[in-house]
Every structure is written in structure tokens, then in C-alpha cells.
Length: 293
Image (cartoon, rainbow, N blue to C red; front, top):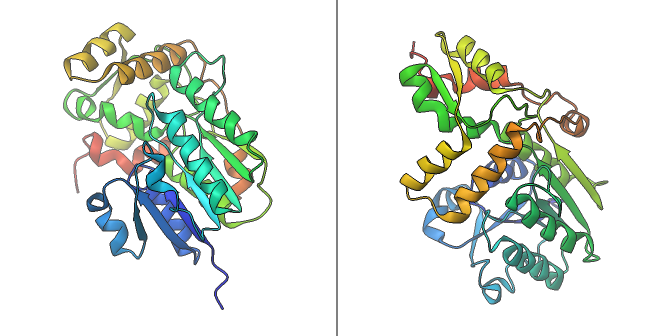
């Protein structure tokens, strides 16, 4: 008889969730994906994931989404409605009697954090911590994949234009976040724990430029830009006010070294080092202009 769990995942079509889903499936577990638009989950359905339609902004649509699930991976998109949506997940999980909620929060989430996204995450973290439900909270740092916003300029000009000043970040690869989430979902000993997840070192963008220089085989330089220029660019792209505020908050805080932090949680939980920026750069070099051999 199979001993695999049934693990429900919200935000299943985002950046991190598909990696988590693949890993827990490989571990012999059944996955149920809660999605707002099933058409966008065709690839998940093709790999044997059970698809359940529901909208986190409409709690009644997810009332029974977690019935029979052993665990829930709670991932909610950033936005002003995030606390409401996270609360809906927590409440539906409570009613379903799940044995564990693993919540994807964010580095620095706190009521006095300098970023609006961090403060909203803190509300959801606090609710879950006080819910009397079995929980685990993951707080990952800045995603290395966020560097793709500079891929085009690196490929065309050999330059990264980012509003990060000389701030250092303990940035992390989303593959490591997914690996920790899958581990926590499928092994005991994590209830009531909060894990802050970072890469192996805290680095500034000049260090990133050096890693990309080695990876793509041509000089790459980092050119700091003002946060106001970032805001103007986002506005010209039609970015909504909340998202503009989110970016500007984070980049201002990171420029002031708010993100200069490293933990050993990834290596301790997985038994291997977190991925370095050098390894990440080598893996993604074609997107940054490395000639295909």
C-alpha cells in the first residue's frame, strides 16, 4: 500500500510551485493543484496533477478544495489582497483538517519592515502562527531569477541597470526554495518552525556582474540607477501602483543593505550547499547572451 501523502498546492501555476510539484511527485506523493484558470494548468494535468478550480479572492469557491489532503502548500501572489487570500487558504485548510500547512512567506517579513510586501506577509504569518494549526513558514530571500530583468541589457550592451546601489543580498535560487518546500512537506520534524532561506553568500551586483562575465564569456558591468528611474520605467510600462510601490520599497531597502544576511537553513535541511551565483550564472548564461556552441 502506498504511503504517499496527498499534498494540495495553491498558486500552482506560478514560478516556484511547479518545481515543488515535480519534486513531491517524484517522492511518491499525490498532488492537487488549486488554480483559478484550469486552462493555464494543462501542463500540470498532463503530469498527473489533480486540478481543482477555485479563486482565493472568493473564499466560498475553495471551501472543499483541501478535503482529504494531508498537507497544503500555501502560495499567494503579492498584492493588496494577499492577507485575505492567505486567510482563505488557512481557513479552508482548518475546515478540511489537514495535518500541515507550509506557507511561502518572504525574507524580512515583519510588522515594522520597510517594504509593504513584507508587512502584508507578516499579517499572514501572524495569523497562521496563532491559528493553532500545524504549520511551517518559509521565508526565502531575493530570487536569483529576478536577475532575468537585466538579461536583455546584458545580452545587448553587457550592462546590468538595476536600482540596488551597492547593497548586498543573500539571494537564492528558486530551485533551492522548491527543494526545501518539498523536503518540509514530505518529512517529519518541521511543525511550528520558521525557516529563513538564503543563498550561500551575501553579494552585491558588482559580484553578480563578475559571475555573469565568467559565464557568458564577455565583460558585464553593473550600472546602478536611481530608484526613481526604476519607478518611472515601471510607470511607462503600465505597471499598477501597488507593484510599483513593492519594487521601489524593496530596491530602496536593499540598496541600504537591508538584505545583507545569510543563513545555513538550506544546507542544513537538504544536506548540500545552496546554489552559488556562479553556478546560477553558468546555468542561465544563454539567456544573458552567451553564444550557443
